[in-house]
Image (cartoon, rainbow, N blue to C red):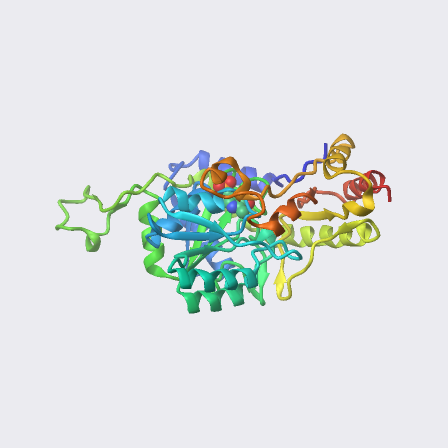
Length: 386
Ligand SMILES: *Cc1c(COP(=O)(O)O)cnc(C)c1O
């Protein structure tokens, strides 16, 4: 089976991890700061805070802006559940904004319309989480204007978009978001095994994030309620978590970062090949949003079912049977039983639901060979009757 995604690990990665294993520090050592500094520099952000996974990153990003009971967080239904769950961890409410039927990203027009209604109802969101679906930014310039007009905080879930750019600047640079979240899960662009990060240009948020990832503990005398008792002294000033990343993971991340540009270049090459070789099949291929250079975490096609004569499920299972590890991103979050129990129902976000009935993610990872891609295209031709 050709998987839909997988990590690329080379000898340099292995050597970097072994070196940490033989050092004095397995966690809270020098590799974490090095990884953070290198990521901040590469993505032109002031601050980078590494944590144990992107779900934890989303959680502490919400806490850092004091999202809590009575507040609202809005995101897209076409995402992994973590983009919404972060609000629930904080006791806040979740609502969704339907997707654009072409980019499959949160639709800025729908966002504006919903904000107008919410303002009248006195129910504006405190946080909006645009997700750079498949590695392509949302219309962030427009979302930023709306954030200024309606006063919400933008936490960009760029789990798919490490190495992507938007209007000529790296995703994560902070031009359009208060905080940007990256994931380093093995199927994502670069990996640390498990891992995540928050990038921000706001120093006070970075400080808060560092506290929240490590129990709410500070060793900075300026933040203490009384003079230090001595060199051992620390204070817990708020309720935080142990969301730290290890030095072992950070060393892997730093080694992977050296290959980020090559990984993204290869993904772009594969996407261009898919575009070319699938052009004559009954498929809607990915649309490019003007100004956004995708990192191509996913290559998703939508089936033109009226022309295919098979069901979505038959096509999906036909490809799996042919050894193609297709996947589906995403089941609309509002249709999950947990969210249905909060009152969401079928029909709430029709564009995301229609997308779900037709979408298939084809294999996409930097180690995919041209020959494997041809096998995939051939299988698609056969299953789709092209
Ligand atoms: C992978 C992913 C996450 C969660 O990442 P973890 O590092 O596995 O916690 C969050 N949001 C999106 C959009 C993702 O794809």
